Amino acid sequence: MDPGHEIAGTVFETGAAYRGPHRAGDWLVVGPLAYNPEDEFCASGQHELCSDYREIAQHWPGGFAEYLAIPPECLRLGTIQPLPTGMDPAVGAISEPICSCINAQEKGCVGLGDTVVVIGAGPVGCIHLCLARARGAHVVIMADLEEERLVLCGALAPDHLINTSQTNLVDEVRRLTRGRGADVIITANAASATQVQAVEMARKGGRILLFAGVPKDQSRPGLDTNLIHYQALQLIGTTIFAPRHQRLALQLLASGRSPGDQLITDRWPLTEFRQGVAKAMAGRSIKTVFQCDLHAS
Image (cartoon, one colour):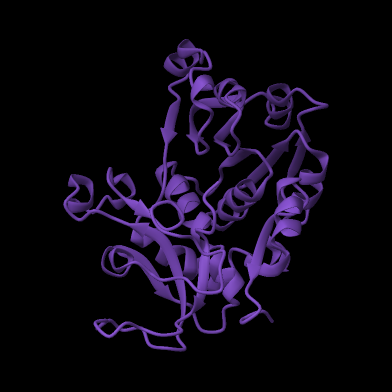
């Protein structure tokens, strides 16, 4: 867990040497990444493949604070955008994970007519649901072990919910697709067993987005490579995002095609951080936002 890397806030002051466009009072959405312009991928415009990026909340202090100093590297080489006019700052803050989901679904060519299965109905899984809808998916199926997560996810109107603690996931997806299998499967959880299931439930030519990482000692789950070979499946791994993905995420939220207000189920003052985190970690919220007393509404 990166502590405090989803950030929106107002500019309180700028340093004497700052010559950029942002002024005191401006609302900004602060993407956490600072890319290395000398990296070969950044040089070719593939910032999402940067091998030497740095990140707020990893290399620098994160946003769970009343004030945050934006590193010069993030100002020069990062992803910082004005908050779109009229947008709730809390919605702007949660644009960060949406950026990575856009990158993944872009690579997986999620689109019109697709049947999409998202394994994991947590915050990221719910974002994938909303994004697949926005990209034109025909059917979106959500799966999770926890009934409470599925109930929360149900408010976002997936076509089907599967409780995998009660139902065989692969068999149920096959049944729902009349034996055909899903066009796209997104593993939005840290369980390597679901990567195996994803291969088993994909239709011929299907795309499997390995979105979530898994523990290092579980990262060789024993995939059936004959299924991958003979079914002509595509396994696609993605991580982080490029500046264009942040711009797209903010456009998507501003347009209402991704319901940011529905994704945020809890808002807490920063002074009640422990309580808010405990509820989020228990899976009893989708996205939890912490607001400083200075800016709480």
